[in-house]
Amino acid sequence: MDSELENFLNLMGEAERAGGRVLHELTALASSAELRELLKKVGHDEGYYAGELAAHVRRLGGNPSNRTGDFVDKVRALPDLRGKLELLNRGQRWVIRKISEQTPSITDESLRAFLIVMAQGHEMNIGALEAALARGLQ
Ligand SMILES: [Fe+2]
Image 1 (tube, rainbow, N blue to C red):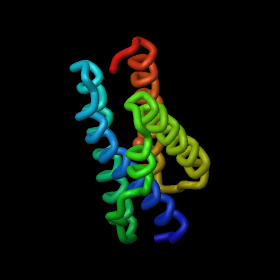
Image 2: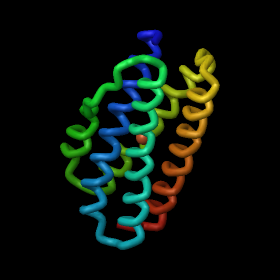
Image 3: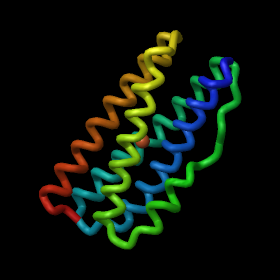
Image 4: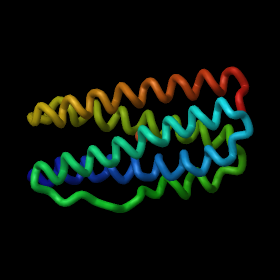
């Protein structure tokens, strides 16, 4: 497969794997059941996207990366849950931006559709987390 596309999909996969790890850790820090449920759901989404990205790389003849992005350490370095969640959402926005930069040049229809839905899923999860933070959930 095209190595630029392979690198992009693997970068996204590493970011999603990092997101899944972060969300797993943040779920344990949340004190309200509602925030815990939301973080668990967002974490499952991240794991789903990581798995699908690897499957697309494999289908297109590339080698999926099994690395985890360094985002995990950046979130761990912050002291409070709210700061961690805000950084998480900034990371999620970065993923949407990267996808929107790449999507127009992607010719594989199934991959393009997956990426569009993945970006939409990120928008929804960012919005749900922002709403939870605005309501003061911890
Ligand atoms: Fe993500």
